[in-house]
Image (cartoon, rainbow, N blue to C red; front, side):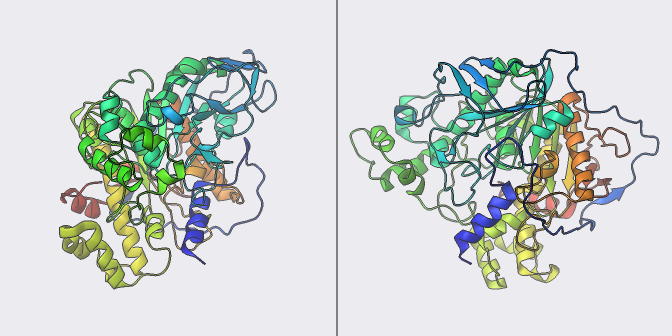
Length: 563
Protein backbone atom coordinates (compact mmCIF):
# COMPACT_ATOMS: atom_id res chain seq x y z
CA UNK A 1 0.00 0.00 0.00
CA UNK A 2 1.33 3.46 -0.85
CA UNK A 3 2.67 5.56 2.02
CA UNK A 4 0.14 8.39 1.53
CA UNK A 5 -2.74 5.94 1.70
CA UNK A 6 -1.35 4.30 4.84
CA UNK A 7 -0.97 7.68 6.53
CA UNK A 8 -4.50 8.68 5.62
CA UNK A 9 -5.81 5.36 6.88
CA UNK A 10 -4.07 5.48 10.26
CA UNK A 11 -4.65 9.16 10.96
CA UNK A 12 -8.31 9.00 10.04
CA UNK A 13 -8.82 6.15 12.49
CA UNK A 14 -6.66 7.73 15.18
CA UNK A 15 -8.57 10.99 15.12
CA UNK A 16 -12.01 9.54 14.48
CA UNK A 17 -13.08 10.21 10.92
CA UNK A 18 -16.28 9.95 9.00
CA UNK A 19 -18.92 11.89 10.87
CA UNK A 20 -21.26 14.51 9.51
CA UNK A 21 -23.85 14.62 12.26
CA UNK A 22 -24.27 15.04 15.98
CA UNK A 23 -23.95 11.43 17.11
CA UNK A 24 -22.09 8.24 16.28
CA UNK A 25 -24.10 5.75 18.29
CA UNK A 26 -24.53 3.43 15.30
CA UNK A 27 -21.36 1.54 14.44
CA UNK A 28 -20.65 -0.35 11.28
CA UNK A 29 -18.43 -3.31 12.06
CA UNK A 30 -16.63 -4.98 14.96
CA UNK A 31 -12.95 -4.30 15.58
CA UNK A 32 -10.73 -6.74 17.41
CA UNK A 33 -9.61 -5.29 20.74
CA UNK A 34 -5.98 -5.58 21.80
CA UNK A 35 -5.50 -5.62 25.55
CA UNK A 36 -2.24 -4.49 27.15
CA UNK A 37 -2.10 -4.06 30.89
CA UNK A 38 1.63 -4.49 31.42
CA UNK A 39 3.35 -2.20 33.89
CA UNK A 40 5.22 0.69 32.31
CA UNK A 41 8.93 1.07 33.18
CA UNK A 42 9.62 4.04 35.39
CA UNK A 43 6.32 3.79 37.25
CA UNK A 44 5.52 2.05 40.52
CA UNK A 45 1.96 0.93 41.07
CA UNK A 46 0.54 1.66 44.50
CA UNK A 47 -2.73 0.77 46.11
CA UNK A 48 -5.30 3.54 46.67
CA UNK A 49 -5.65 4.69 50.26
CA UNK A 50 -7.92 2.28 52.07
CA UNK A 51 -9.66 5.08 53.96
CA UNK A 52 -10.47 7.10 50.86
CA UNK A 53 -13.59 9.14 51.29
CA UNK A 54 -16.25 8.26 48.72
CA UNK A 55 -16.53 11.05 46.20
CA UNK A 56 -19.72 12.81 45.30
CA UNK A 57 -21.23 12.02 41.95
CA UNK A 58 -19.65 14.18 39.24
CA UNK A 59 -22.93 14.38 37.39
CA UNK A 60 -25.42 17.14 37.99
CA UNK A 61 -28.05 17.14 35.29
CA UNK A 62 -30.08 20.33 34.89
CA UNK A 63 -33.05 20.68 37.16
CA UNK A 64 -35.90 18.83 35.38
CA UNK A 65 -38.09 21.72 36.40
CA UNK A 66 -35.83 24.26 34.71
CA UNK A 67 -37.15 25.79 31.49
CA UNK A 68 -36.20 23.92 28.35
CA UNK A 69 -34.14 25.68 25.73
CA UNK A 70 -36.30 27.22 23.03
CA UNK A 71 -36.32 25.73 19.56
CA UNK A 72 -34.31 28.71 18.32
CA UNK A 73 -31.40 30.14 20.30
CA UNK A 74 -30.57 33.82 19.99
CA UNK A 75 -26.85 34.50 19.61
CA UNK A 76 -25.03 37.73 18.87
CA UNK A 77 -24.95 36.79 15.18
CA UNK A 78 -28.59 35.78 14.92
CA UNK A 79 -30.84 32.86 15.78
CA UNK A 80 -29.71 29.24 15.40
CA UNK A 81 -31.71 26.04 15.29
CA UNK A 82 -29.89 22.83 16.13
CA UNK A 83 -30.65 19.13 16.26
CA UNK A 84 -32.48 17.09 18.89
CA UNK A 85 -35.84 17.25 20.58
CA UNK A 86 -36.88 20.17 22.76
CA UNK A 87 -36.23 19.34 26.41
CA UNK A 88 -33.51 16.80 25.58
CA UNK A 89 -29.77 17.20 24.90
CA UNK A 90 -29.25 19.11 21.70
CA UNK A 91 -26.45 19.91 19.27
CA UNK A 92 -25.81 23.19 17.46
CA UNK A 93 -23.20 22.68 14.76
CA UNK A 94 -21.25 24.99 12.48
CA UNK A 95 -21.97 28.31 14.22
CA UNK A 96 -19.71 31.13 12.92
CA UNK A 97 -17.69 32.76 15.71
CA UNK A 98 -15.63 35.04 13.44
CA UNK A 99 -15.69 36.35 9.89
CA UNK A 100 -14.24 34.13 7.15
CA UNK A 101 -10.46 34.87 7.12
CA UNK A 102 -10.30 35.18 3.33
CA UNK A 103 -9.16 37.85 0.90
CA UNK A 104 -7.92 40.88 2.79
CA UNK A 105 -8.70 39.11 6.11
CA UNK A 106 -6.17 36.34 5.43
CA UNK A 107 -3.40 36.67 8.03
CA UNK A 108 -5.30 39.17 10.12
CA UNK A 109 -6.65 38.82 13.62
CA UNK A 110 -10.15 37.29 13.56
CA UNK A 111 -12.90 39.82 12.90
CA UNK A 112 -16.54 39.68 14.10
CA UNK A 113 -18.83 37.44 12.08
CA UNK A 114 -21.53 39.21 10.09
CA UNK A 115 -25.05 38.94 11.45
CA UNK A 116 -27.46 36.77 9.48
CA UNK A 117 -31.15 37.21 8.81
CA UNK A 118 -33.67 34.55 9.70
CA UNK A 119 -32.62 31.37 11.48
CA UNK A 120 -29.35 29.54 10.83
CA UNK A 121 -29.80 25.77 10.52
CA UNK A 122 -27.02 24.57 12.82
CA UNK A 123 -27.41 20.90 12.00
CA UNK A 124 -24.16 20.05 10.15
CA UNK A 125 -20.52 20.64 10.92
CA UNK A 126 -18.86 23.53 9.15
CA UNK A 127 -15.84 22.98 6.88
CA UNK A 128 -12.53 22.21 8.53
CA UNK A 129 -9.75 24.76 8.11
CA UNK A 130 -7.64 24.37 4.98
CA UNK A 131 -5.35 21.34 5.07
CA UNK A 132 -4.47 18.24 3.10
CA UNK A 133 -7.81 16.46 3.35
CA UNK A 134 -6.12 13.21 2.34
CA UNK A 135 -4.41 13.07 5.73
CA UNK A 136 -7.41 13.39 7.99
CA UNK A 137 -10.83 13.09 6.36
CA UNK A 138 -13.02 14.22 9.23
CA UNK A 139 -14.87 17.35 8.16
CA UNK A 140 -17.42 17.42 5.34
CA UNK A 141 -15.10 19.77 3.44
CA UNK A 142 -12.09 22.04 3.96
CA UNK A 143 -11.29 25.64 3.15
CA UNK A 144 -10.40 29.03 4.51
CA UNK A 145 -13.98 29.88 5.45
CA UNK A 146 -13.81 27.66 8.52
CA UNK A 147 -14.11 29.66 11.74
CA UNK A 148 -17.08 27.86 13.23
CA UNK A 149 -17.77 26.08 16.47
CA UNK A 150 -20.19 23.46 17.78
CA UNK A 151 -22.22 23.41 21.00
CA UNK A 152 -23.78 20.41 22.73
CA UNK A 153 -26.20 21.36 25.49
CA UNK A 154 -28.11 19.33 28.10
CA UNK A 155 -31.16 21.09 26.66
CA UNK A 156 -32.36 23.15 29.61
CA UNK A 157 -31.70 26.64 30.84
CA UNK A 158 -29.37 27.00 33.77
CA UNK A 159 -25.70 27.39 34.55
CA UNK A 160 -24.07 24.15 33.46
CA UNK A 161 -20.27 23.92 33.49
CA UNK A 162 -18.70 24.40 30.07
CA UNK A 163 -15.98 22.31 28.43
CA UNK A 164 -14.24 23.97 25.46
CA UNK A 165 -12.10 21.47 23.56
CA UNK A 166 -9.33 22.25 21.02
CA UNK A 167 -8.46 19.52 18.52
CA UNK A 168 -4.95 18.33 17.77
CA UNK A 169 -3.14 17.65 14.51
CA UNK A 170 0.33 19.19 14.74
CA UNK A 171 -1.02 22.69 13.92
CA UNK A 172 -1.38 21.34 10.35
CA UNK A 173 -4.54 19.23 10.32
CA UNK A 174 -7.62 18.22 12.26
CA UNK A 175 -11.08 19.66 12.68
CA UNK A 176 -13.88 20.01 15.19
CA UNK A 177 -15.88 17.44 13.21
CA UNK A 178 -14.50 14.27 14.77
CA UNK A 179 -16.45 11.21 15.81
CA UNK A 180 -14.41 10.87 19.00
CA UNK A 181 -14.85 14.46 20.23
CA UNK A 182 -18.61 14.68 19.89
CA UNK A 183 -20.09 16.10 23.07
CA UNK A 184 -23.50 14.45 23.07
CA UNK A 185 -22.78 11.92 25.83
CA UNK A 186 -21.01 14.45 28.05
CA UNK A 187 -24.07 16.68 27.68
CA UNK A 188 -26.64 13.92 28.14
CA UNK A 189 -24.93 11.81 30.81
CA UNK A 190 -22.75 14.36 32.61
CA UNK A 191 -24.74 17.58 32.32
CA UNK A 192 -21.99 19.60 30.62
CA UNK A 193 -22.19 22.14 27.83
CA UNK A 194 -19.47 21.10 25.37
CA UNK A 195 -17.89 23.32 22.70
CA UNK A 196 -15.48 22.26 19.94
CA UNK A 197 -13.95 24.69 17.45
CA UNK A 198 -11.89 25.12 14.31
CA UNK A 199 -8.80 27.34 14.06
CA UNK A 200 -6.50 28.26 11.20
CA UNK A 201 -3.72 25.76 10.51
CA UNK A 202 -0.34 25.55 8.80
CA UNK A 203 0.98 28.66 7.07
CA UNK A 204 -2.54 30.13 6.96
CA UNK A 205 -2.62 30.06 10.75
CA UNK A 206 1.00 30.66 11.71
CA UNK A 207 2.74 32.66 9.00
CA UNK A 208 4.99 35.49 10.11
CA UNK A 209 6.59 37.95 7.70
CA UNK A 210 8.21 41.37 8.14
CA UNK A 211 5.43 42.90 6.02
CA UNK A 212 2.77 41.43 8.32
CA UNK A 213 4.58 42.78 11.38
CA UNK A 214 4.82 46.24 9.80
CA UNK A 215 1.14 46.20 8.80
CA UNK A 216 -0.17 45.18 12.25
CA UNK A 217 2.48 45.10 15.00
CA UNK A 218 -0.18 44.07 17.54
CA UNK A 219 -0.95 40.86 15.60
CA UNK A 220 2.17 39.85 13.65
CA UNK A 221 1.46 36.08 13.68
CA UNK A 222 -0.23 33.32 15.77
CA UNK A 223 -3.52 33.69 13.91
CA UNK A 224 -4.55 30.16 14.88
CA UNK A 225 -4.10 31.01 18.56
CA UNK A 226 -6.01 34.25 18.05
CA UNK A 227 -8.86 32.17 16.57
CA UNK A 228 -8.90 30.05 19.73
CA UNK A 229 -9.07 33.22 21.84
CA UNK A 230 -11.90 34.56 19.65
CA UNK A 231 -13.86 31.34 20.17
CA UNK A 232 -13.38 31.63 23.94
CA UNK A 233 -14.62 35.22 23.79
CA UNK A 234 -17.67 34.05 21.80
CA UNK A 235 -18.35 31.44 24.48
CA UNK A 236 -18.07 34.10 27.17
CA UNK A 237 -20.65 36.29 25.44
CA UNK A 238 -23.08 33.63 24.16
CA UNK A 239 -22.92 30.37 26.07
CA UNK A 240 -25.54 31.34 28.67
CA UNK A 241 -28.16 31.13 25.92
CA UNK A 242 -27.31 27.42 25.56
CA UNK A 243 -27.61 26.75 29.31
CA UNK A 244 -23.88 27.17 30.07
CA UNK A 245 -22.14 29.24 32.73
CA UNK A 246 -19.57 31.68 31.23
CA UNK A 247 -18.01 31.92 34.68
CA UNK A 248 -17.30 28.17 34.82
CA UNK A 249 -15.32 27.24 31.69
CA UNK A 250 -12.67 24.54 31.38
CA UNK A 251 -10.32 24.80 28.39
CA UNK A 252 -9.06 21.42 27.17
CA UNK A 253 -7.04 20.18 24.23
CA UNK A 254 -5.21 17.16 22.89
CA UNK A 255 -1.76 17.15 21.24
CA UNK A 256 -1.39 20.48 19.40
CA UNK A 257 -4.70 21.41 21.02
CA UNK A 258 -3.14 20.86 24.46
CA UNK A 259 -0.13 22.93 23.41
CA UNK A 260 -2.63 25.58 22.34
CA UNK A 261 -4.23 25.43 25.79
CA UNK A 262 -0.83 26.05 27.38
CA UNK A 263 -0.25 28.91 24.96
CA UNK A 264 -3.55 30.40 26.13
CA UNK A 265 -2.38 29.94 29.73
CA UNK A 266 0.85 31.80 28.93
CA UNK A 267 -0.67 34.43 26.64
CA UNK A 268 -1.19 38.07 27.43
CA UNK A 269 -4.80 39.01 28.21
CA UNK A 270 -7.70 36.62 28.24
CA UNK A 271 -8.45 37.02 31.95
CA UNK A 272 -11.62 35.27 33.05
CA UNK A 273 -12.18 33.36 29.80
CA UNK A 274 -11.45 29.97 31.38
CA UNK A 275 -11.06 28.67 34.90
CA UNK A 276 -9.50 25.21 34.60
CA UNK A 277 -7.24 23.56 32.02
CA UNK A 278 -6.77 20.05 30.64
CA UNK A 279 -3.68 19.05 28.63
CA UNK A 280 -3.94 15.63 26.96
CA UNK A 281 -0.67 14.55 25.33
CA UNK A 282 -0.01 18.21 24.59
CA UNK A 283 2.38 19.75 27.14
CA UNK A 284 3.82 23.24 27.40
CA UNK A 285 6.51 24.10 24.87
CA UNK A 286 9.77 25.94 25.35
CA UNK A 287 11.40 25.62 21.93
CA UNK A 288 9.11 27.87 19.90
CA UNK A 289 10.77 30.23 17.40
CA UNK A 290 10.98 33.92 18.15
CA UNK A 291 9.39 36.40 15.79
CA UNK A 292 12.56 36.84 13.74
CA UNK A 293 12.88 33.10 13.24
CA UNK A 294 9.24 32.77 12.24
CA UNK A 295 9.61 35.73 9.85
CA UNK A 296 12.59 34.03 8.20
CA UNK A 297 10.41 31.00 7.42
CA UNK A 298 7.71 33.34 6.14
CA UNK A 299 10.20 35.09 3.88
CA UNK A 300 11.17 31.70 2.46
CA UNK A 301 7.52 30.99 1.71
CA UNK A 302 7.12 34.37 0.02
CA UNK A 303 10.17 33.60 -2.11
CA UNK A 304 8.84 30.17 -3.05
CA UNK A 305 5.57 31.78 -4.16
CA UNK A 306 7.30 34.43 -6.24
CA UNK A 307 6.15 37.28 -3.98
CA UNK A 308 9.53 38.25 -2.58
CA UNK A 309 10.53 41.65 -3.92
CA UNK A 310 7.13 42.54 -5.35
CA UNK A 311 5.72 46.02 -4.78
CA UNK A 312 3.13 44.69 -2.31
CA UNK A 313 4.25 41.36 -0.89
CA UNK A 314 1.11 40.93 1.23
CA UNK A 315 -1.19 41.54 -1.71
CA UNK A 316 0.78 38.98 -3.67
CA UNK A 317 0.57 36.42 -0.86
CA UNK A 318 -3.13 37.05 -0.31
CA UNK A 319 -3.75 36.60 -4.00
CA UNK A 320 -2.34 33.08 -4.04
CA UNK A 321 -4.60 30.05 -3.91
CA UNK A 322 -4.61 28.48 -0.45
CA UNK A 323 -3.32 25.18 -1.84
CA UNK A 324 -0.33 27.00 -3.33
CA UNK A 325 0.35 28.62 0.02
CA UNK A 326 0.17 25.34 1.94
CA UNK A 327 2.35 23.41 -0.48
CA UNK A 328 4.96 26.07 -1.27
CA UNK A 329 7.49 24.75 1.28
CA UNK A 330 8.19 21.07 1.98
CA UNK A 331 7.45 19.98 5.54
CA UNK A 332 9.81 18.31 7.98
CA UNK A 333 10.05 14.55 8.06
CA UNK A 334 7.28 13.12 10.20
CA UNK A 335 6.08 16.75 10.58
CA UNK A 336 8.62 17.50 13.33
CA UNK A 337 12.20 16.52 12.43
CA UNK A 338 15.02 17.52 10.12
CA UNK A 339 15.00 20.14 7.42
CA UNK A 340 11.78 21.70 6.13
CA UNK A 341 9.00 24.00 7.25
CA UNK A 342 7.40 23.64 10.65
CA UNK A 343 4.28 25.76 11.13
CA UNK A 344 3.68 26.43 14.81
CA UNK A 345 3.11 29.29 17.25
CA UNK A 346 5.89 31.82 17.73
CA UNK A 347 6.99 33.96 20.64
CA UNK A 348 5.88 37.21 19.05
CA UNK A 349 6.34 39.43 22.11
CA UNK A 350 2.69 40.46 21.93
CA UNK A 351 0.18 37.63 22.25
CA UNK A 352 2.93 35.28 23.45
CA UNK A 353 5.39 37.36 25.49
CA UNK A 354 7.66 34.37 26.12
CA UNK A 355 8.05 30.62 25.82
CA UNK A 356 4.89 29.03 27.27
CA UNK A 357 6.76 26.54 29.44
CA UNK A 358 9.05 29.21 30.85
CA UNK A 359 6.16 31.56 31.63
CA UNK A 360 4.30 28.77 33.40
CA UNK A 361 7.47 27.84 35.30
CA UNK A 362 7.90 31.43 36.44
CA UNK A 363 4.25 31.81 37.46
CA UNK A 364 3.67 34.39 34.71
CA UNK A 365 0.58 32.65 33.38
CA UNK A 366 -3.10 32.23 34.13
CA UNK A 367 -3.00 30.14 37.27
CA UNK A 368 -5.78 27.58 37.20
CA UNK A 369 -6.22 23.94 38.30
CA UNK A 370 -4.70 21.51 35.82
CA UNK A 371 -5.48 17.97 34.67
CA UNK A 372 -2.63 16.60 32.54
CA UNK A 373 -1.30 13.33 31.21
CA UNK A 374 0.11 11.22 28.41
CA UNK A 375 -0.37 7.82 26.82
CA UNK A 376 1.70 4.67 27.04
CA UNK A 377 2.73 4.55 23.36
CA UNK A 378 2.76 8.19 22.28
CA UNK A 379 5.51 7.69 19.72
CA UNK A 380 3.97 4.96 17.57
CA UNK A 381 1.84 7.34 15.51
CA UNK A 382 4.68 9.86 15.16
CA UNK A 383 7.01 7.12 13.96
CA UNK A 384 4.38 5.98 11.48
CA UNK A 385 4.25 9.48 9.99
CA UNK A 386 7.99 9.34 9.38
CA UNK A 387 8.34 5.64 8.52
CA UNK A 388 5.07 3.82 7.80
CA UNK A 389 6.95 0.62 6.89
CA UNK A 390 9.64 -1.45 8.54
CA UNK A 391 12.95 0.26 9.29
CA UNK A 392 16.39 -1.14 9.99
CA UNK A 393 18.95 -0.01 12.54
CA UNK A 394 20.92 2.01 10.00
CA UNK A 395 17.81 4.02 9.12
CA UNK A 396 17.09 4.56 12.81
CA UNK A 397 20.64 5.74 13.47
CA UNK A 398 20.55 8.10 10.49
CA UNK A 399 17.21 9.55 11.62
CA UNK A 400 18.51 10.26 15.12
CA UNK A 401 21.57 11.94 13.67
CA UNK A 402 19.46 14.14 11.41
CA UNK A 403 16.93 14.99 14.10
CA UNK A 404 19.26 15.58 17.05
CA UNK A 405 22.64 16.51 15.58
CA UNK A 406 25.37 16.65 18.22
CA UNK A 407 23.17 15.00 20.83
CA UNK A 408 22.68 11.87 18.71
CA UNK A 409 25.40 9.81 20.39
CA UNK A 410 23.97 10.21 23.88
CA UNK A 411 20.45 9.53 22.61
CA UNK A 412 21.48 6.35 20.78
CA UNK A 413 23.19 5.18 23.95
CA UNK A 414 20.03 5.85 25.95
CA UNK A 415 17.83 4.02 23.40
CA UNK A 416 19.83 0.97 22.27
CA UNK A 417 17.97 -1.12 19.72
CA UNK A 418 18.97 -4.30 21.54
CA UNK A 419 16.85 -3.25 24.55
CA UNK A 420 13.59 -3.12 22.59
CA UNK A 421 11.52 -5.71 20.73
CA UNK A 422 12.20 -4.06 17.37
CA UNK A 423 13.74 -1.03 15.73
CA UNK A 424 10.25 0.44 15.34
CA UNK A 425 9.58 0.08 19.07
CA UNK A 426 12.91 1.76 19.81
CA UNK A 427 11.95 4.77 17.73
CA UNK A 428 8.45 4.73 19.21
CA UNK A 429 9.88 5.01 22.72
CA UNK A 430 12.36 7.74 21.78
CA UNK A 431 9.81 9.93 20.00
CA UNK A 432 7.11 9.47 22.61
CA UNK A 433 9.42 10.33 25.50
CA UNK A 434 11.00 13.35 23.80
CA UNK A 435 7.91 14.97 22.29
CA UNK A 436 5.14 14.12 24.78
CA UNK A 437 5.85 12.13 27.95
CA UNK A 438 8.80 13.99 29.42
CA UNK A 439 7.57 17.49 28.53
CA UNK A 440 4.33 16.44 30.24
CA UNK A 441 6.25 15.59 33.41
CA UNK A 442 8.03 18.95 33.24
CA UNK A 443 4.74 20.79 32.81
CA UNK A 444 3.03 19.06 35.73
CA UNK A 445 6.01 19.80 37.95
CA UNK A 446 6.16 23.43 36.81
CA UNK A 447 2.47 24.04 37.48
CA UNK A 448 2.59 22.29 40.86
CA UNK A 449 5.54 24.47 41.87
CA UNK A 450 3.36 27.58 41.46
CA UNK A 451 0.90 26.21 44.00
CA UNK A 452 -1.86 25.33 41.57
CA UNK A 453 -3.58 21.96 42.04
CA UNK A 454 -2.58 19.30 39.52
CA UNK A 455 -4.00 15.86 38.70
CA UNK A 456 -1.84 13.67 36.45
CA UNK A 457 -2.52 10.47 34.54
CA UNK A 458 -1.04 7.83 32.25
CA UNK A 459 -3.41 6.18 29.78
CA UNK A 460 -2.15 2.65 29.11
CA UNK A 461 -5.04 0.86 27.43
CA UNK A 462 -4.33 -0.38 23.89
CA UNK A 463 -7.81 -0.13 22.32
CA UNK A 464 -7.05 -1.89 19.05
CA UNK A 465 -9.05 0.63 17.01
CA UNK A 466 -6.31 1.33 14.45
CA UNK A 467 -6.33 -0.97 11.40
CA UNK A 468 -2.61 -1.61 11.97
CA UNK A 469 -1.05 -3.83 14.65
CA UNK A 470 1.36 -2.90 17.39
CA UNK A 471 0.39 0.71 18.05
CA UNK A 472 -0.47 0.10 21.71
CA UNK A 473 -1.87 3.03 23.69
CA UNK A 474 -1.18 5.31 20.74
CA UNK A 475 -1.29 9.10 20.57
CA UNK A 476 -5.02 10.11 20.59
CA UNK A 477 -6.13 6.70 21.97
CA UNK A 478 -7.63 8.27 25.10
CA UNK A 479 -10.04 10.54 23.21
CA UNK A 480 -12.86 8.01 22.66
CA UNK A 481 -12.85 7.20 26.38
CA UNK A 482 -12.90 10.83 27.54
CA UNK A 483 -15.87 11.60 25.30
CA UNK A 484 -17.41 8.11 25.70
CA UNK A 485 -17.63 7.88 21.90
CA UNK A 486 -15.99 5.02 20.02
CA UNK A 487 -14.51 5.91 16.62
CA UNK A 488 -16.73 5.72 13.58
CA UNK A 489 -16.88 2.13 12.37
CA UNK A 490 -15.96 0.66 15.77
CA UNK A 491 -17.59 0.13 19.14
CA UNK A 492 -16.61 -0.47 22.76
CA UNK A 493 -16.70 -3.92 24.28
CA UNK A 494 -18.05 -4.22 27.83
CA UNK A 495 -14.68 -3.50 29.50
CA UNK A 496 -14.05 -0.51 27.27
CA UNK A 497 -17.52 0.84 27.96
CA UNK A 498 -16.73 0.60 31.67
CA UNK A 499 -13.41 2.42 31.19
CA UNK A 500 -15.14 5.12 29.14
CA UNK A 501 -17.70 5.51 31.92
CA UNK A 502 -14.98 6.06 34.52
CA UNK A 503 -12.94 8.42 32.35
CA UNK A 504 -15.84 10.57 31.20
CA UNK A 505 -16.90 10.79 34.86
CA UNK A 506 -13.40 11.87 35.94
CA UNK A 507 -13.20 14.56 33.27
CA UNK A 508 -16.74 15.80 33.97
CA UNK A 509 -16.05 16.02 37.70
CA UNK A 510 -12.91 18.04 37.03
CA UNK A 511 -14.86 20.37 34.74
CA UNK A 512 -17.51 20.74 37.41
CA UNK A 513 -15.40 21.06 40.57
CA UNK A 514 -11.69 20.82 39.78
CA UNK A 515 -11.66 17.50 41.66
CA UNK A 516 -11.77 14.50 39.28
CA UNK A 517 -13.80 11.66 40.75
CA UNK A 518 -15.42 8.60 39.24
CA UNK A 519 -18.63 8.93 41.23
CA UNK A 520 -18.45 6.03 43.67
CA UNK A 521 -15.06 6.62 45.26
CA UNK A 522 -13.70 3.19 44.31
CA UNK A 523 -10.85 4.67 42.27
CA UNK A 524 -9.79 7.95 43.90
CA UNK A 525 -7.51 10.21 41.86
CA UNK A 526 -4.58 11.40 44.00
CA UNK A 527 -3.43 14.98 44.10
CA UNK A 528 -0.15 15.37 42.24
CA UNK A 529 3.06 15.90 44.20
CA UNK A 530 6.36 16.41 42.40
CA UNK A 531 8.13 14.52 45.20
CA UNK A 532 6.86 11.20 43.85
CA UNK A 533 4.95 12.11 40.66
CA UNK A 534 1.89 10.28 41.96
CA UNK A 535 -0.70 9.86 39.23
CA UNK A 536 -3.61 7.74 38.08
CA UNK A 537 -3.09 4.84 35.67
CA UNK A 538 -6.05 4.51 33.34
CA UNK A 539 -6.59 1.01 32.01
CA UNK A 540 -9.09 -1.76 32.64
CA UNK A 541 -7.55 -1.85 36.12
CA UNK A 542 -7.49 1.76 37.37
CA UNK A 543 -4.65 2.20 39.87
CA UNK A 544 -2.41 4.81 41.41
CA UNK A 545 1.30 4.90 40.61
CA UNK A 546 4.43 6.85 41.51
CA UNK A 547 7.24 7.76 39.18
CA UNK A 548 6.56 9.08 35.68
CA UNK A 549 8.97 7.42 33.25
CA UNK A 550 11.69 8.64 35.60
CA UNK A 551 14.76 7.17 33.91
CA UNK A 552 13.84 8.48 30.48
CA UNK A 553 12.61 11.84 31.70
CA UNK A 554 15.61 12.46 33.93
CA UNK A 555 17.72 11.85 30.80
CA UNK A 556 15.73 14.27 28.64
CA UNK A 557 15.63 16.89 31.39
CA UNK A 558 19.41 16.91 31.24
CA UNK A 559 19.50 17.46 27.47
CA UNK A 560 19.66 20.96 25.94
CA UNK A 561 17.16 20.20 23.16
CA UNK A 562 13.54 20.82 24.14
CA UNK A 563 10.35 20.67 22.02
